Length: 397
Ligand SMILES: Cc1ncc(COP(=O)(O)O)c(C=O)c1O
Image (tube, rainbow, N blue to C red; front, side):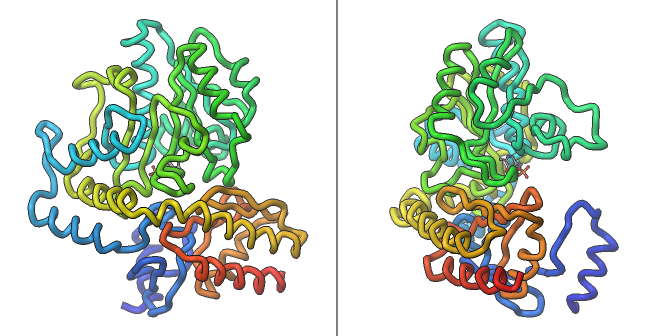
């Protein structure tokens, strides 16, 4: 089928919920993807922080092939080994004692919200249900998670929102202190706000939140859907801050390209969810878990990928900073590891389109923040290719 016909069919048959580039991607290998016309692109989007090991990592592909021939799906009324093995690997690699599996980031957030409320009622025996979330956050598109998302543009037209969320400015510990009351059960925060524009936590912010949660018997729930799985140079972003959360949400990079989400929790928090209180038909599906386990094991066993991420990120930030000094319309460059943002003084859509023409996939969030999330296996030379392209594009702006 020729590309223009595919694009026409797409418009005809698919709901118009995304602003898409006029590009049909047909193949991916490592850091590169290929379109229906055979053009090659260096991928700085990674399916929005999903393809952390690059496209079609051989270990993930083999795990999928083997599992697909053995068992693709069974109900959670039974046990399955890939699910157990993945849970074990996640527990061993983190603060957590228990895992709940689902299929996406938004579902992991829904599970966290439900756990947070039930924890107060069932474990603490107190009728508390309010969750404090941060302005500029993004937690997903289903009703609970979008209500937790403290950005009104995502609520517009969908009201009424789920009640019980209190929004405070990001990086403002006093505002959180003031928002805590007898109804508060948890604080939900991204260690770095991704969709909100790659907003960094100020030094000590997460630690202060931890102390505040301890003082008031609240759960500290970290949404690591975007920052988890090595993206920031540690397997989990909370490791940078020396903070131990009670609950962590994962998805995106967890599945090596397969859809999967997970809620990680301490034993104390996890006891809030008893049999029958929460569930998901596909959650912990053997196929998705086999892919996720292969991906996680690769990240853990390979002593190069994650340690290199922090260094690569520093190099990338330095190079972007060099461009900032050259072009006055660049307001700020920020990020950690390979989650990096460049804030412009005007919308960045034209830059995304120009990069595409040059053979680079990049993303723009909050209208003005160019966001770069390459596979963690990208090398310095490849990062520099984008820097060169951006320089050429910026020079013409
Ligand atoms: C921090 C965070 N939480 C939750 C989500 C929602 O994840 P999903 O799109 O898999 O539902 C996202 C998606 O961008 C995210 O960045």
